[in-house]
Amino acid sequence: MSRRPEPVQVVKQRRDATLQRLVSGVPYIQFLGIQVDRRGDELTAILPYADKLIGNPMLPAIHGGVTAAFLEVTAIIELSWAMIWEEMEAGTVNDDAPRIHLPKTIDFTVDYLRSGLPRDAYARARVNRSGRRYASVHVETWQDNRSRLFASATGHFLMPQRDG
Image (cartoon, rainbow, N blue to C red; front, side, top):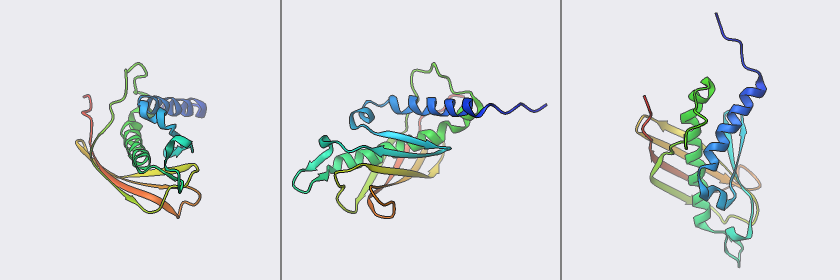
């Protein structure tokens, strides 16, 4: 006998709650003000403009370290999201767990293509390879036009040990 599908509101609420737990578990995400928008299984990270993000007030341009951190956070959240998707969809993610264990960065290479302007930035990551121990992720960030990237990055990550 097949199970009846859950109401769409229940599924949406579970996905949003899991994503919120994932994002709220990293204080640096709150410090930078990064938000994550979810549409189905696709995530878009948003870095809302703030004066504290400017590295060179003469241009003005977003600090390169902020750009790199935004890209790295986006990669880690996307990788974690992909890692917990099946458990979340099955309803087996434990809401009482202290926190979701995040992948650890092995290396992260950023290509700065142009200055980040003093406005909101957006980023999306694509998991190129994800195994039990290792993962590779590519990230792109843009501001006004998705086809005009201002930075991109590739990272390699050590995956957390899975229970069971």
